[in-house]
Amino acid sequence: MVAPAMVTQLDYHRMRAVFTRFRAANPEPRGELEHVNAFTLLVAVVLSAQATDKGVNAATRGLFAVADTPEKMLALGEEGLAAHIRTIGLFRSKARNVIRLSRILVDEYGGEVPSSRAALQSLPGVGRKTANVVLNTWFHLPAQAVDTHIFRVGNRTGIACGRTPEAVERAIEDNVPAEFQLHAHHWLILHGRYVCTARKPRCPACLIRDICQYEDKTA
Image (tube, rainbow, N blue to C red):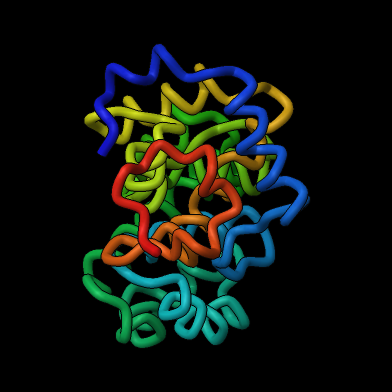
């Protein structure tokens, strides 16, 4: 990892070069969790904690066919929901949280998903990362949802260094030029998932190999 202190030394032109390349390769990056509205996106992200997007998508296709609103989710009930998501880790606690947040959305927000981070984080099972995914993906705000991929890529490459997810989030906000902020977290997630992987990064296939600060590049 690059030391967090290097965040103050990031070169503006290098940062522009990094994200210009990401944008040229994938102008409109998208998250891989399947959803049809703000509510199903929120539920999918809550379910994705300690689970893969592929596994969540497999479970939610049937679920969202019958429960794509908070009202329908409440009608399905906790046991009915649990039956749909049984293949996802921690499915019982996640089912409990989804039913509880559905009740709050109906009672306090008229069945709509709120568009502020504070309101989202007040919902059961919703942390800062989940809130930022919803704000970015559905409401198109430049919120940076730092997961394990972004944390690794940010520190390994020197793009956004920090000892905590919150520090990496702040580094992205502080150092990525404004024109790239909306899609920055999607580019970094996808880069971490398919190229800058945890065990053996695919450096020969990397778009930013020549301007990446990682010292132990693979051949």
